[in-house]
Image 1 (cartoon, rainbow over the protein chains, first blue to last red):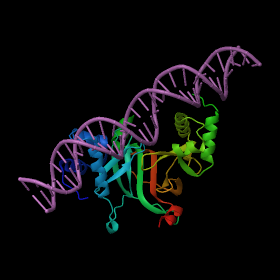
Image 2 (cartoon, chains in turn red, cyan, green, orange; image 1 turned 90 degrees about the vertical axis):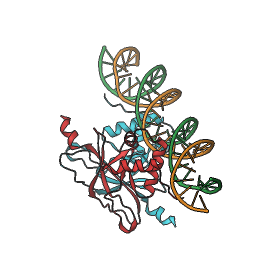
Image 3 (cartoon, chains in turn yellow, cyan, green, brown; image 1 turned 120 degrees about the horizontal axis):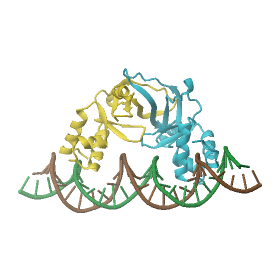
Length: 130
Length: 130
DNA sequence: TTATTATTGCGACTTAGTTGCAATAATAAG
DNA sequence: CTTATTATTGCAACTAAGTCGCAATAATAA
């Protein structure tokens, strides 16, 4: 199953590369100005995840967000997304936090994925709040 | 809006108290042997969350899980769920990890919620794996 | 230029969770 | 104990996110 170069894919990747945020499908579609089909966007994003180009984060409403892998660790060719994300309850942006975490696991446990999400108010929205 | 004591509520709370796991709606319903309506279960669980009796965790498939608050911090009457959860990809159980985390946030940011989920294989399933 | 097959778009579908509303039942009032 | 109040329940309908099958399209290879 060899990958092909398509307009949809480069468009989507460009949108993701142009921001340091993790975008929801909705936000992505808005940026793309509805030029790409819903289902296609999801399929492209999932392919990107498989290829390690992008990582997926789940917010606490159960919505997927996708971010271009910029500052992700890659020890021995394996992607690691052991950083947290912050979601602002007001403006809805999801951003990657720098801080890397290592959680000690009970003996014998094997990790495959990491999903860390903190919600609250970003500086701008917190100030506007009262 | 005063709370009332009902059968459904005590049943649900008892199921949650009887385990150290975070249960999905599905798992809970199985334990209850379908005696309680789907919508009611969700409503009861959300009420428990509001009252700080239970905490909600999102797994990386976007599914909610609920756990009785046993080892949760309560500094000045405010609940804190700053611990991680581990979800086994094979048996599907979600358990609370002891390790508490503190993530440094950019200045001016305000935290309201914390959701940390690690996926992989628990000891039992990891051993059975190969 | 043609053949192969990955990718797309469309629509239908699934699953998790929510909501409106009438019926039920826990508590308060008499 | 009886009645009134209203929180809670059950049901069905709904919503929203994400997936899937399939025929049409379009990258790449031949």
